[in-house]
Length: 127
Ligand code: FES
Image (cartoon, rainbow, N blue to C red; front, side, top):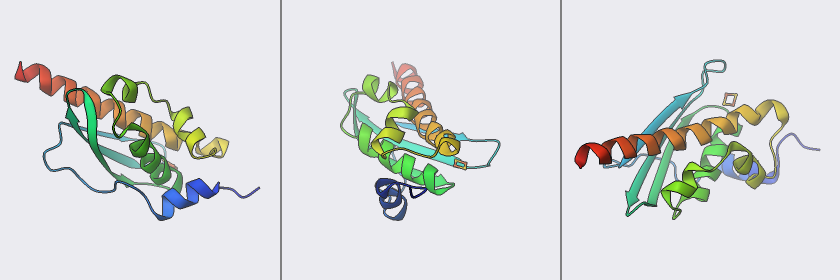
């Protein structure tokens, strides 16, 4: 079997939703201390629905593919559903990742959670 599925290769070569959102409602940045890879996630949220999402990832192919897939999975979703997205679900949507690359998908889960926490903190400050 090839190391990476076709979906991983597709999302790595043509990542969706790359970039930044200037007026994001929530921003999350996480990193993996071991490999040094970093992922930053920007969310635009309206009425508790994620209307837009962009990411910047400085990392390996699996991290880039995971961020790209994760953004596709949460776009248009409710905040609570995005919060429940697991790295396993991201990896499954990519038709799997090699075991030793699973930690790369964890970055996507954590980046989304961190961006949502930031959003929740900011909306509390507003009220
Ligand atoms: Fe670090 Fe993939 S090797 S996120």
